[in-house]
Length: 247
Image 1 (cartoon, rainbow, N blue to C red):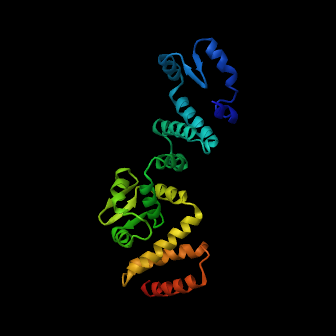
Image 2 (spheres, helix red, strand yellow):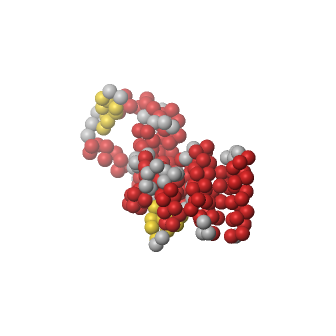
Image 3 (tube, rainbow, N blue to C red):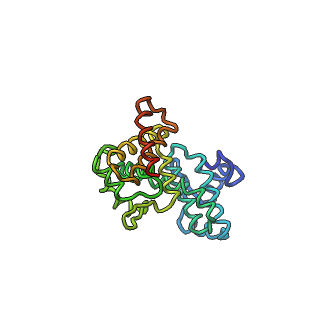
């Protein structure tokens, strides 16, 4: 309640001034820090008095207002995403609006996943929107980037709707999902992940041109902003020269 009132966006007046009157009229009651309707039928009747179109727009406005206030408050964040989900389901949200809200909604969903699944999809997000099974097998065989077998997590990623499998390829179900997961990785850790993935794939590449090019791309992403040492620059220059022959 205070979150909405502090932003003064939805509604455009200070509704705290009206709450004591709602209690006096028997519409609501206050129990500690909670205001509640005196009966579910009362709440439902009032809700249905709001025209359908206005109702969906109210859910959108409330959700957006709460998101700005949520920050590190998971309870408010969950309430905000519930409001936005209602708008998206009933309000004919266009593609631009769905794209705008997707990162917030997805971040809430991801917070409920296991740490090993999140570490798996974060690493795969560094490789782009889709990953060949042979690339995953190469990373798993060395067991250096992750300390567990991420293949055990892939079926769960598919079950959760994060990824889908088409033949030998795992791909994120939407580019927004891949991008959101990628941006959840702290910048410094992201660079180190690109480096670790690249070095690991180089060890497995041998004469596999596709894997060598992928490994080099990962290393270049690290070198772009990662401040490699002189020794690393020398090593990576050789891998780039080899990649040029494959290209």
